View 1: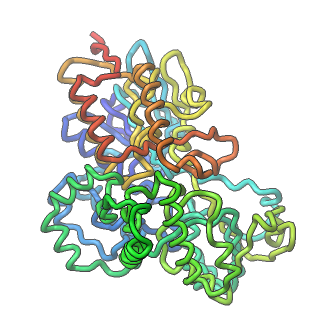
View 2: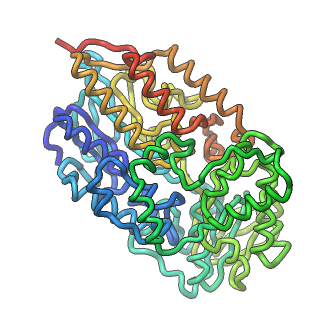
View 3: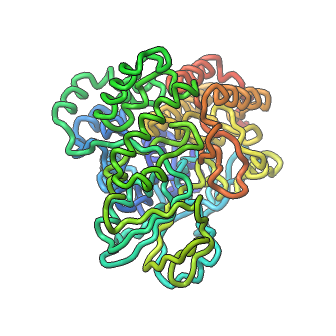
Length: 537
């Protein structure tokens, strides 16, 4: 239960962001409390329990860096940690720092309303709690609201249907079943190989193929751990100043268009053999030069054709209508090899569109596919979905969803004009989903806590993004995105996977290190671009 209805800081969410916030705020002597819809800590890793769910960043890089003791006493078992291990890790963090006593679980925040007279936020929950706080921090996560399936006839289906983003905690046994998987994004790419090992038949309905690279996962190499720990402080700093928040990509300054075909091929082969996001660092021009990008696409397509025995199936799995890497590159374990199994069938919905869900299965314009169960692997309402579910109202009672009707607008991805003392962690306009989320989360949490401390030291009560600074930042985010190839893909980065959602490129593509320097510079200038007001009284 809430220890005090009068909080210094109310935190919404208890994943990576919420846990670190509670730890930092408590260390500042502030009264903070978090509200979590789940029954325990974990955020994304509490909800996403589908078969094969795991992180796509190497484990030692996808972890907190703020506490040396925490880093010393935790040992990862795999190169890419699976969901159960990530959940145990976050539970360990909660226990180590005794954070659960400041979290109310099984509670969803329904509204957050700014009281201009009191200069405080009033939060109400679905359990009827009312809490007042000086500051409100939305640590709601970027991939926490599943994209709801909306297919004609889906209510008629007689069997069980599952969403990868809301998988039953007790698991699902597909033994002897015919299973339909709708979608071929990241969660499908991870879950399909696992489902295919168990089910009698798996029929995969693909609308848009994705580029994926092999993880080469396995037990974590003790030598890698030893090398990481021997240079841990330096490695962590490199992460913070890198483009993506991770250093395993080992970026070079080579330009794909300026090297020979042999050098280019050898470079890609070496990166492919290393696995994971190593290929992202192969050449500096991959995401900005169409010719360089085409080289990466051609190489990956050839690898897909090597991994899939049936040329016709391989052909359907090769993306052609968007640049390589402009949808988040997937990292897989035997995804393409799964199509070589006799119990796996690929249905190309571009050739034969999905017509409807029937009582017994899935119907396309060409055929009926009887199935016993359906898995919807259709992704998330990314970055803004969780915020849109809460009735957030700022000055004059203006709703955030109305303010963002044409697309999200923020200053630094941290604050919104007209919503004083409301912070968003890894919100739209920050590197967010283009980065290692843990690195970006730590940077945001530290910036927010430093800001709150700075305000307190100066007896300032309110901070709010100015409209001019917000407009300039939105313009900058768009300018940077326009320098890349990202906007050429109908991706969830633009909200293209959610019907009716405005098409706006949401993350900041300038890089984690550049963004950190910008944020630090703004803070050093007395929070340039923000409007500051004295504390009441």
